[in-house]
Image (cartoon, rainbow, N blue to C red):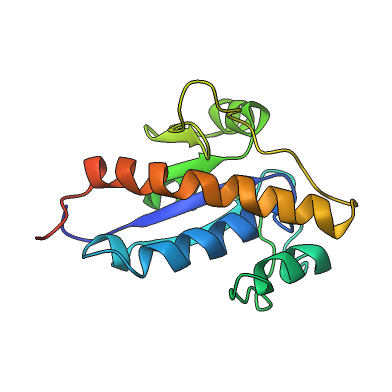
Length: 162
């Protein structure tokens, strides 16, 4: 693979889960060897409105672990985003189904964010929207838990330089 490509993280409105997942995965990939560290990480929503700010509690939950996502603005998922992505990570099976129904073609690597976790782990990431900060922190921790398994999968998709 010559150009690194991108990783697209998808939720509903692109103001809670996917911006947190984007910030966390971008942070983790920065510590990886090439070409992983050069992968662009972006997020979008299946029912988003363009230009909405990230939810305050998502912002706070990530600030608590040293990651700033204040510049995030929501965006609607596009076919071009899907086509450019080496990996599309959805928060729920519903998000995946919506992409499969609407995309032409659907991405080959259309997965759940927690899909690579051990069999016993819950594969979906619950929506904290409108809940207390504690719910957003729980969501953040559920996302963080999946990052090593996503990076391991990415290493099977892109040739890592030694």
